[in-house]
Amino acid sequence: MTTPHPLVDQFQRRITYLRLSVTDRCDLRCSYCMPERMTFLPRKDVLTLDEMHDLALGFIARGITRIRLTGGEPLVRRDMIDLVRALGRRIDAADGHGRLEELTLTTNGTRLAEFSEDLRSAGVRRINVSLDTLDRARFAALTRRDSLPQVLEGLAAAKAAGLKVKLNTVALKGINEAEIADIVAWAHGQGFEATLIEVMPLGEVDEDRFDHYLPLSVVQDDLARRWTLAPSDHRTGGPARYWDVVQTGGRLGLITPLTNNFCEGCNRIRVTATGQLYACLGGTEQVDLRAALRSDDPQAALSAGLDTAMRIKPARHNFAIDRRGNAPALPRHMSMTGG
Ligand code: SAM
Ligand code: SF4
Image 1 (spheres, rainbow, N blue to C red):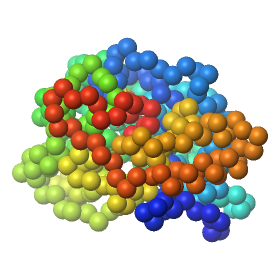
Image 2: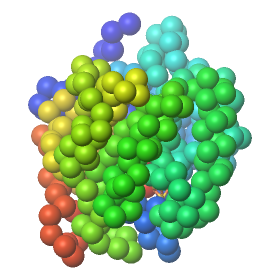
Image 3: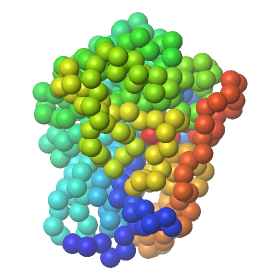
Image 4: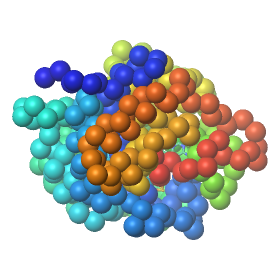
């Protein structure tokens, strides 16, 4: 089926990928992501799961073919699996209301032991799991929770359920810097893909992110001294660039928003748990889709909101992490937009 009104922005980029944050709450407190005493959104402001479902259907009708559920921690939201099941029914649906090709999830892994089987049977095939260290004490210090055993158990459950796992690791100077190669080797040994991410200046935290900013160009040079990194033409439509690590036989992705701009091929749009559409992870351009959803003609208002988003989506993000003590480039935390 061809989509009657596909989402194409003013730079002729076709938008096919939605990242939907289902909650801003989380059971961890990664120090680069949020402060210990994080103020979460009042529950009344957050979309209900039914509203999120309607919202997703509106996007699918406009040609969104991939949805990633994220957060905060998506699996801490009560009954979240019902939304996964409902959206899972849109995968390869042939009823003329739009077809989803893929439903994925980004999670910290703490609840995967409980939900992996359900995710798989709902139609999820791939998940991203964030893990920045394999050292229990370091994990407890970095996330302010002693949950590494739970995460490792969750990863084992995901593997056993047949979910393809990509491990996401934020590279942090002076924290996990010396461990990155071991994490990549471990991931590849488990049959997981590994992706490294540069820390981004989003939202106030209890520290200066500049202290821990580690350019991936440095990490890559280090890994290249240890291993043969063969450039891969694998692409996911996302910002990562890939290498095949000859010695481990695994794939390595590098996401370098700060050292290397990835905006030209952007195919995505983000919606927060309160229904705010952000046209760019690094920008302030937004459309209030909650108002659209709560209007008299939600689907028409939603579609009009998406047209607005296509008009305001900027050519590129403009954040940089360059000076010690700088305020974050954007006041909102990554846990709002889900990365
Ligand atoms: N709680 C889930 C998780 O951790 O996977 C999903 C949401 S979390 C905000 C998504 C990703 O954003 C994680 O991989 C996390 O490491 C990353 N992240 C959070 N804050 C970040 C920041 N300031 N810079 C770069 N990555 C960040
Ligand atoms: Fe929670 Fe994910 Fe942020 Fe860590 S990165 S505090 S797990 S939302």
